[in-house]
Length: 335
Ligand code: TXA
Ligand code: MG
Image (tube, rainbow, N blue to C red; front, side, top):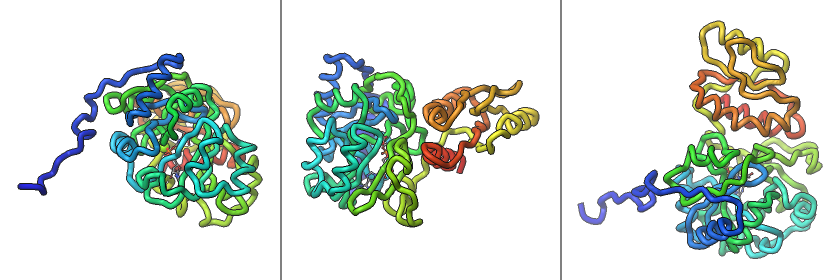
């Protein structure tokens, strides 16, 4: 056997056997969480979009741990989080004029900027790319934690790869308990879908991933096909956002009838729509507009799974504003 013998990494050996602490948003607990991050440990925390799984972005070993516990493909880069604009120059080669304008308008907030990375940013953090994604979240607990950590924090959504993003600490525990050191419980995330990822290296913003900040907000009216996500944002290539039940998108006004039809065939079905569920259909939430659907969507997927449903029927929303990001997630979930 000798030196070719397969040796699982320490993280793999420890997988699922770690005690994951739930921390609160008190100063004392946030100081503990900050110490853990600085020491190279993994801590999940709330943001205004979804919960992130944090690691010291400048510590390759810590970042490797994130990929391992999430079972994330190594070519899918992470977003680096800062408490304010100050640390940006340490991460990127140049803050372009466009980046400066967008940061001034949208940070703190659910927008991630992609810029050329400094060589100090480990390749494992950038998925081997020459660029790095950076975001200043708009959440008091996230900002307090990032200040305590005093290091840039790489944080993908705190779900196992391919699963819906977590919008509560309980969702994080469902996917990652036993694999990470701690989760900071900061309640439910208000937006419920991920940040908008924007390449700001050039003169005009290029949207790589639709998200909570809309194209309308950014003034991106039209974008050349192919300039967007699939080529430039590796994460959008991978299987994503999928619960274990089948997700079916129903055109506006038809969702209740679709769900009732499935129930009539003996299928166990749940409904997420603008109306109340018909008899024999599980109600997974009611919304009036796309923003409300965004806030409910991932939690509804997880509720449907827990109820052991076969199918979740979701009523479509118009493909404009935040509806564009919601429909993007829905299409991937139903693929
Ligand atoms: O709202 C959010 O963005 C959440 C919270 C925790 O901040 N984070 C999040 O991370 O959604 P994650 O890892 O699930 O998604 C990151 C996305 C992926 O699609 C990835 O490919 C893209 O950002 N990304 C990261 N670095 C990139 C880069 N250098 N160039 C292009 N895309 C990048
Ligand atoms: Mg994710």
